[in-house]
Every structure is written in structure tokens, then in C-alpha cells.
Length: 340
Image (cartoon, rainbow, N blue to C red; front, side, top):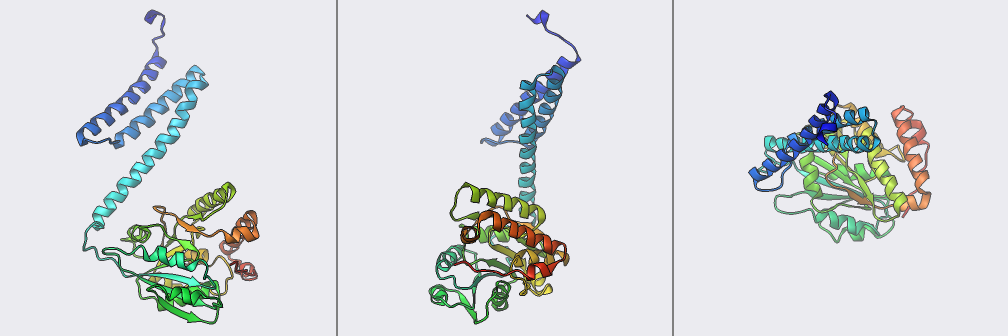
């Protein structure tokens, strides 16, 4: 049997690929034995990539699609694994450099701002999710900006330990600026009144921007209900907003106070896309864009239900395109319909 086998340079190349695959398992086993727990060392990903690449070349020589296909998928998965490993190591090094795990780390003061316009139905759950973030060493204030409310939003807010500021006028940008004007924190977090923060969100958010002098950013969002089409749209929107540095559908914006003041806050003239506009104007001042994907905010899909998924996605795209092309008048001309 062995006598009938070919022994040429291509066979040696294939053996080299298989040897690299064996070496990665050996490296993983040795690293796990050394640490006393399952562990994947960095060299595992490098050996996997090298082995898959060599075997892909070997498969092309053989003309075997059955051998080539798993190697192509393997290259994709191993590359992604290497990127995640690198990101984890960078984050670990950053935490050590800044000392984020120290109990005496000097966290800046934090204000969570909730703009409210006739939100009595959703406000209680939002405030409860924010206040549940409190814990040892987690100090922050919650400012509720009641703008033009004609329902029982005020009565709902007074049940909780928050600071209230009221004004008979209303507007998306106005309501956010109203709350920011009362806030005392160096870090400002804007949370829509129909958005729920999962446990530990504020801690993760603060850790993500620690050490960054000036920043503006957002977090991914997820629908509070809906089928596969809605969820797919949220996944797509999260991906696009991350790449284009826009506001995600999560209903959360984070910005440092100096940057917020430098750009005079939200543009109160815009009837929509105020958060994306804030991000882009903040970036022009030199602030760093942060996309905090360590948690996902859950937000209402009532606008999707009223206007339709496709219509809402296209409206976002048109507004963002107009702002990017500096045609703000096209956005200003739009009318915003509050859905409650």
C-alpha cells in the first residue's frame, strides 16, 4: 500500500499542513496542562491558519472540492478566532494599564439622562432598569427631562429617586438638552424612555470609555418583541451603524461633557436623527467614536409597528445620507410623529 503512494513535493506540502494541525492540538494540550484548565493559546490560531492555508493550496493541486471547502471555512473561522483573541488580550492589557480593577479607581461622575415626552407606559421599566445598575462603588445620578408631557409621566417619575426637570415645550433634541442642562456628571449617558438596560450595563459602558479623554458613541440595540424580520433588521442596523459610526437603534448615547458642550449639545431643529448628528459633530471636534458591544440595550419597536419595518429603515438611511452630504435642510423638512 505504501509503495503505491506518491512521494513528491506536493505530498510533503500536504504533510506539512497536517503536521501544523497536529501541532496546534499539541500546543493547546500543553497550555491546558500547564494552567490546569482548558485553554487556547495564541499560537493555536496561527498554527490553524497556516495549516488551513497549506491544505487549501494542496486541495487546489488535487482538484478536490471536498478537501478544499472545509479549509476555506476553516480559514474564516480561525481568522475570526485570532481577531477575538487579539481583542481580548488588548482589553486585558488596557485594564491592567489603567487599573480598572482597583477598588480606588477614580471614576468620573456619571449622569444618566432620560428625555420624556408622554412616556407613562414605558417609563417605569426604563427607570427601574437604570436604577438597578447601582451597587458597591457604582454612584450616578438619573435626570428625567419632562418635555411637553400631557400624560402621567411626571407621576411615574416621582416614584423613583431621580432628579426632575420640566418644560412645557417638547422636541427630541430639546428634551435631551433639557436633561443635560440639569446634569452634573462628567460622563453623560442618554437613554430613551422606552429602552431597557441589562444588569451591569453602566459598569461596562464606563469601563469601555475609561482612559479616553473625549468620546462619543453608542451601543447595539435589540427589539423588545417582534419576529425574525424585525430582529434581522436590528442586526443589520447594528452592523451598519458600527461601520458608519452612526447611532444604533439601541436608544443609548454616551458622550463626555466637554465634547457635549463644545458642540452645544443636540441640534433642536432636527426632527429626527439627532443622535447620529450629535455623534458626527462630536467626531469633528476630535472625539473618539466608541461602539460598546459588551451589552445590548432592549428598545421598543412601536415605530416599526406603526410605520413598517422597511419604511423606517429607509427613513433612517435617507436622513443619515442627507446629514453626511451636509444637506441638513432635507432632514429639517421632515415631520416627526411620536408613536405612543
